[in-house]
Amino acid sequence: MLETALGPAHPDVAAVLNNLATLYDEQRQYAKAAPLHQQVLAIFETALGPAHPDVAMSLSNLATLYDAQGQPTKAEPLHRRALAIREQAFGPDDPTVATSLSNLAGTYHTLGQYPRAEALYQRAWTIREYAFGPGHPTVAITLNNLAGLYYSQGQYVKAEPLYQRALTIREHVFGPIHPSVATSLQNLAALAHAQGHYTKAAPLYQRALVIREHTVGPEHPSLVTILQNLAALVAAQGQYAEAESLYQRVLALSEKTLGPAHPQVAVSLRDYAALLRHLQRTAEADTLEARARTLSGQRPREPDTVPCTACQP
Image (tube, rainbow, N blue to C red):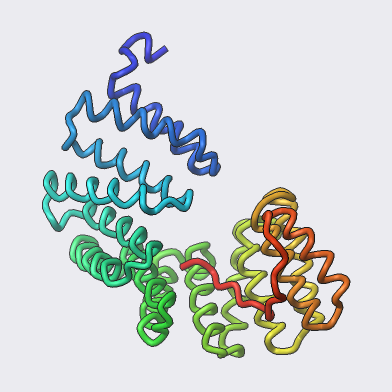
């Protein structure tokens, strides 16, 4: 065993633990991942010193876990420390610095600190364009994130050209049938949807759905968001039968792929209930709302209008 041969505080042991933690991250088993990330960080700090680039990597991984758990206040100082280490080790214009800038910007976005987030995203964009060229996929990621920041503030005029440019880059690099292209299409669709441009949004959602179904299959959890958004769109257009069919598919897919107790199931139930209330099918809506409250532990609330559940940028 590696720990026996090298000792529990050896960097090679930390590297193995980091791989295991990353696996748990990908499976969203954060309770298992967190102590491993913390152990890796402690080993690297002791063995390599507090300003080593591997320490920055470990800090970034742990901070990203906190972000995923909805704990941005715990993530923010770790992202800042990782950024400082990378700037010191590699200089202010290194691509790893751009990664830390983007991560920290995402945390500030979550915290509602929009001017800070914007400045960091723009700096990351500059670094990546200089390092890789304007048509690189990492540039598309930065454009997408900055557009998402503007979207969340209702600055749609600023968001649209960035989303469009990200789509163009991804289509050129990956081809027209790729998950990242689907993400860009969903974001453009959500942007049009939010502005009430339903005829513009619908074909974008539909093209994204075709790509998702082609690349991951018709029963993958990544389809949930796009189906939910498409259901809300057709409901807003008065196509209630189609909307109901889509909401039923969303609910069934959520339960099957995420589990019947997953928070997304509660969201799916509430969205479907909102449609039923709009159609004055109150008893059915009450039943779905009761199930949703059981899952989320919420008190009864006033009925919603048919929602637009925008996809994540």
